[in-house]
Length: 571
Image (tube, rainbow, N blue to C red):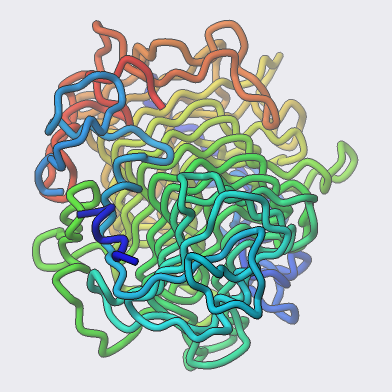
């Protein structure tokens, strides 16, 4: 059989608020009842991101950390000759839109030196050839795949996921072990515990995986259920082991998991790109999760980067270079919505914190290893909306760049009593960069602003910047667009403290983004999408041409948000 290579050949307000203590996204047995540490182990206590709000004279809630909304948790435009936009753009334009990409799936950066097959009609006593496929993904792993091997999964429904123990060897085209659905998103894995897990069975844990083109659809919402799970179970000190590196999650549809859609812990070189992730994080109350969660990343000292690390050979990924360094992790081109905690807090015990769409969680490793993660992470071109928690929530995490995301109507959890509730935020974090984003908040109607009183969504706003102290290096906010829609936020449209600033001269304040149809008649809830979720830019949108160009962003970053003005619909 030929290799798959042939297939790929404002009122810029400064009002502040008190957060509330609560657990962070983490490993499958994280305790959320304690305060202080952001551990992912069963014996560790949950992160308490606390209660005292930033800014002047705001009342404090319970806990003692920095204020939070109660949540812890290519250098050039690609040109692969495909109509990447799917909207009639000319070949070579390669305008991307968020969500699974048929073009990226058809022309990936990896190649296969050997091919094996899994099918619903197969047998684990077979030889794994195309004529005699295996039955289960777990048997495919047990066969001992090595770098350059591709496991081609035929369309159908698979009730069991896989714990991966055999990985690749190098960040190069034939250096990965690849699990790939033969038809984009036509392979449904319904295991409620995990579709793909890389965890603590052996150390060192395996590396270099690609997971491409699956539907991960949990058959039920179970505690600690995760679509993709990477976790080493050890965040207890500076010598804690690392987990895995070079894990790519591409072109998948992930929904129904009790904790998290994609949970990446304890390692680095994690890439979550062109996925649709929704309806997760509903039932796990101690280790609260989100749609996409990167937690307590750890650097692999002594690793020598390859050319593929710095500039991925797929022009749809392209350059990750930031000059002297490069992004070691990326969350890009995803559609993430309706991830929320719904079965934990009550009106009488309003403690929910997570249920974010995307969270970068405690990359400074405070309360865990104590070793801050030193490398850069990119969160870009994602459409995020209608989360119980934040849209893009950067919590206790440094060196994160948040660029060209479109965010609408988040922090909808009625039992999250925190008051720092921005669509896109940096909380307890410093040296983060926010450029070219659109953030639209929809605060709840209220009669007077009161801390710790329902409706808590009266505090919802567009952007928030709150470093741990005024002596911390500030975050950067430039070329963003913000709006508060349908009312007045008690937090102000934008809230900045401890040295962070948001200038209406370098950002567009109190400005409608000119989306084609987003929440026009109904903004939706944390479990119900808005009536209208088309984030394409109308012809007169002020977001068109207002972006800041950077070498690590494709040319379509000239438009604010995740959707190029050339797209008729988006996503």
